[in-house]
Length: 332
Image (cartoon, rainbow, N blue to C red; front, side, top):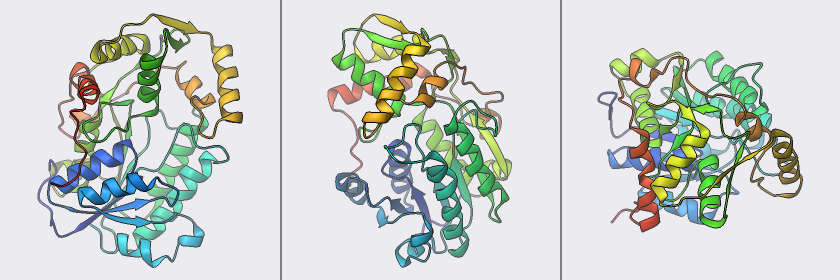
């Protein structure tokens, strides 16, 4: 691991482990010989939890809420853990879910479990652009969750990545890239909100995994990162429309881009949020698509010493998915 030596008998907690980043992180930690305790929501797909077990992780089913606060199941996951990595969150939650409860509420109970379990430190992954007055509820509630961790008694690092891209384990993806890949597979044209002129700084998922690892284990990188909120991004800043074109190249699909006016995009988001169990596009996603989302200071190299992977290299992993040449994570 990048951060130095650590006792491989010590347990590392990963919540949100069935998700895109969680699956990649769990696979990496296990491949390095660490014990991983995955906290999984009771509503998660059985197949997703089973994939984690096949990797070699211990799976603990439970909610981060007041009812589960004294749960012996979750208590075992956190007991004397080397670190706990907090990944729970969504920019387009299921119908009826509130972002403030998902982000700030669950972070509160996550911290309670970590404290009671004598957990060594916390690494939390939020998103680029968090602030108390951010344009989206997503970013504001992520900021509120950050404040809970920062005010707590445990050593911590908060990572704020830009758009995560690439896939080397399983088939999960970021919501935005997943949507574009589905559109490329099924539609004749590719809609881009506002013409796709907002700037982004995509970062390879494996670089984010490496960043988390460097914040967990003792050494120079951990010391540099402790007690900080770090923006991390890839090596390139580009417009969304250019990103979509590069995704087309990587997946061998070439289709025309069509700009979607913001009012029409917001109307579509209202419909999706009202009638879909998991909205294919949310109002917050529309707002994010109309603004630049780039690092002020990219800590990936400056603080954590990681050379960011070129975007084309990260996107090339989607061709592996198309060919079925992707790791499942299962042992054997």
